[in-house]
Length: 129
Image (cartoon, rainbow, N blue to C red; front, side):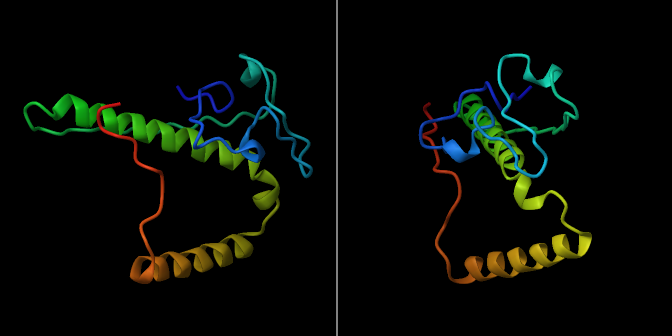
């Protein structure tokens, strides 16, 4: 279970404008999300199920690598869903045509970055954490 409000976020990942406990949507009036039982106090609530399996068969490293990957996945999911909530004013009310246009633009940008850009994404934590 990931709680986008109360689960800890690393100092390097924390962005005040992406903190659901401080954000209030101008378009929808949703937020801020506060307290340990915030999900039972608001409507609607989105539930998202994701299954992540990790299998790394290498004696001596298996447990470390699997734990690292699972921690990283949790970090990515937590940060992503915090952003989805706090960016609601950017996407709420878009038409399907507008969504497709944004998808096309991001697809072009991503393909361009793959060809000539540097590696980007989460700053990798060390495997020994």
